[in-house]
Structure formats: structure tokens, C-alpha cells
Length: 200
Figure (cartoon, helix red, strand yellow):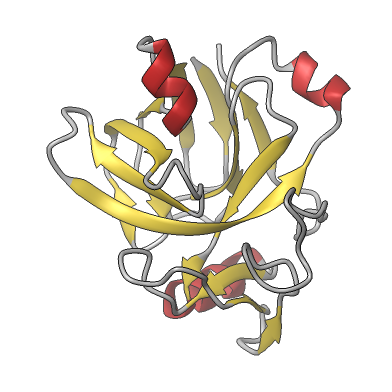
């Protein structure tokens, strides 16, 4: 378990890679346990345990969050790829790594990036535009956003919501023209205050 401190609270985050190796590898399944509420695109998760995995392993464009028993999908999320070095991937010691947007007191921190163990490509999740506007305002950072529906849209239109509420285009949308078979490397957004959280 790893503790992170934000202005709002100290949150214990436990990430466990699923033990059913074949399915876990295909879907990149991880089990997340939060000790306090955490925002994900489209909703706020209460303290508890959740399953995070690729909803569409063949195309790997949409991720989902499910309850611990896999009975209910709580969120579908688009992402854009982020690259880390092999050295950074190796430093994770075979454990998932998540990054949260830090938020002020009274606002739950928000899921930003997940790196599956050993992967050099990570997933920066896109928030619904209205949720992203609120996050951008309270974090003073651009937030990746979309109005595309993860259940019905094949290729999302991604934008950044700026702290002043304006929208700017993102040229790294998954599956759009200009991308190759492998995602193009892109940098993180924000001012560097985000907390990387390696799992225990």
C-alpha cells in the first residue's frame, strides 16, 4: 500500500495486478483499492476496491472501471498514450503505477495516468468536458477531455480544457490520422506537481 498526501486528504492506494495471468495480460487488469474517494472520468469512486481494465482488448481504446465483483461497470474511459523509458518501467519492479491530479481540500483527487507493469506505454484518461472544466479550475492545469461516449464511439475527439475553461485541440487522439501502429510519444500535462504512486 502507498500513501499519498494531497491538500484534501491522505489516500492509501493499493494496486494489485490480477492473478489470472492470461486474462490480466490481455485486458491489463489491475485491482485498485482506495482509502478515500477518487474521481475517474464520469464519476467519483468512494473508498473501496475496483477493477480497472481494457474494455476492448483487441483495440485497446476504451478502459473501464468495475466494482470489485465485476457485476457493474462504473465508468468507461478514453485515453491518450504516454511514453516512459525502459528504465522507468523497470524501476516499477513489475507493479502498476498510477498518477493522480492533486486537488484542494474538499475535492477528491482524480485519476490521471496508469502504467501497467513493465509497459513503456501508459494511459492518460480523458474526462467529460464539464468534469474536466471543474478539475482544470481547481488544479490550475490543462485536463484531457472528450465529449465522446466510450460505449458508442470508436474514435474519440480529444481536447484539453485549460484552467480558464477554454478548449484546445489534442493532436494525439488514439486512432486518428497521423498516428502509426504504435502510439506517438507525448508529454504529460500539468506543472509537475502530480504524484506518481508505485504499488507496493
